[in-house]
Image 1: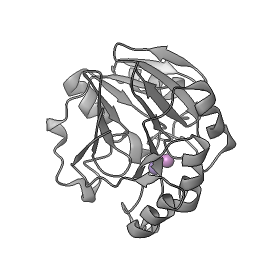
Image 2: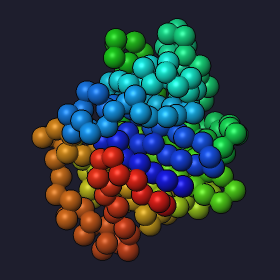
Image 3: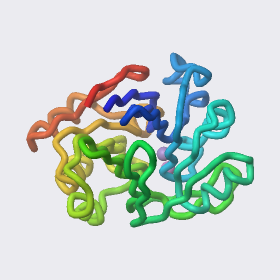
Image 4: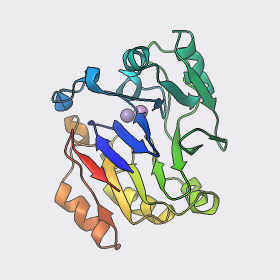
Length: 226
Ligand code: NI
Ligand code: MN
């Protein structure tokens, strides 16, 4: 699969001929000024939770592309009321889409929507096909529930984990999360967007390396083949 980093916690994943956009927050992110959202193609938009730094550009991109939102029940209701196409999941549930399976898994965080509406409980996603598998943790602290993922899902090729601390796990806990989900390739996110989540990238790379894991930073706009 191809994983393109669009800044903060936004990614465009190409999996099994589908384009899957995750947590689009681009126009409001000065660090992602090199990305034009009018050039983003998407078949599906995955939203981990309702916070503005994860859903900000979803409406505009879905209206232009006709992409289907995949999120929790409350977030889907909120976007359906705006006329968008949605597929609601809830924790522990999975569904087989045309590109593969999506499972909505636990995250420990909060999830109000930009207008203050109730956004349900936050989550993460595991995506898999016959041959590929990716975990998208969403905003979360370290949680023992992560240990269920390797028991319930195929062996992960990569895990997208928040590492910026303050609002989510920091580096040390993200290393433990990678151990909990039994994944050796970590794509970090949710760092450096603002001063409170600034990180030392070399320190992160070293911390994962000490546990035999790769921390694969992607420049904003660049694509990694996993
Ligand atoms: Ni959040
Ligand atoms: Mn966030």
